[in-house]
Length: 117
Image (tube, rainbow, N blue to C red; front, side, top):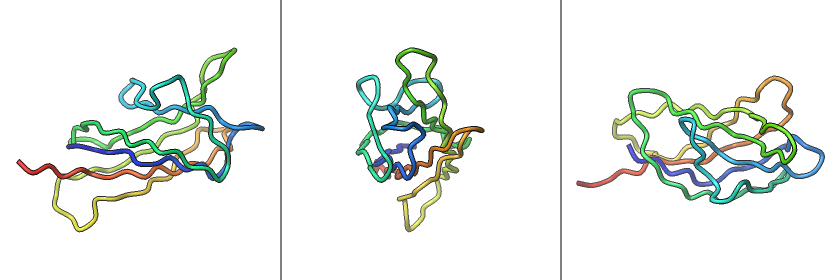
């Protein structure tokens, strides 16, 4: 199944200044092309990244904070239940599930791309 991540919304960043974030899927960095994107509370970043997800299990996208001097921090995960059935809407918004101790709050907008064969 083709999935497209559309935008990442930061409703509350984790650090005093901007968060330096990146996304991972199945252990591999998915976005952005560089090391990270800086984002602050109230901002959103365009992602526009397509990839293939196996529909036999939930899709989990991890949100990480890039750290220059220490290990990168997992801010939380977006877990999406993806089904292959026909539906009226293929556009979704998912809230991040925060890891313990993180104050970060993010939303991820994504869609299922229906391919005609």
